[in-house]
Image (cartoon, rainbow, N blue to C red):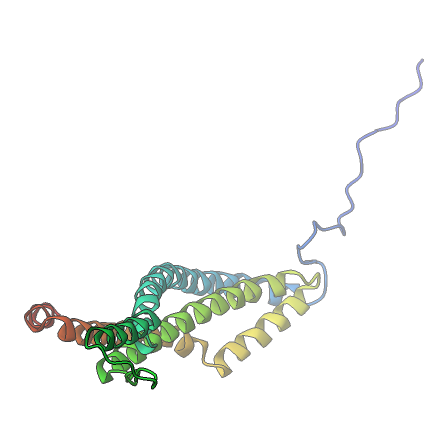
Length: 220
């Protein structure tokens, strides 16, 4: 008779739970379990909708900001004095004096640089447009980070009751800070940016060519 071999199958401890999984054996789990299940489904749907909206806004704001920046780099130069043009004017005055055979000891008078009101208006509108677009992108990034933390923070707690309390705490802060209103306000920033850019573009085209400005205005 051979001795019986002991069962080598490892015994599973019923009290052990996988990491990041709540302990369903603790008191009150029958109450907190269904609550967290329903809350989890609600939070996932809410956060996913915010993430999709913010991702679309981020892509558009990034492309739009790059376009506005390219135009601002060229337009703001009209607010500064063109040193090459000023030097050319001085040389022209000197050449006229030499052509007339006069030798003046006084320095050539350099015309005073004056910024055009149209250039000031266009640059002001485009800089404001860029600022609103960047503010929209920043707000979208912050909402995405907050949504990620909103889902992860309760799941990091081992106790099911602690998870429920943390989730409720975050949800009450969400309500008190009017996050729904914040998320709905972010696209408005982008709309304001677009309106300011279009107004500046129409002014810019108006100073270049009036007929072209009329065509652009009619299309808008």
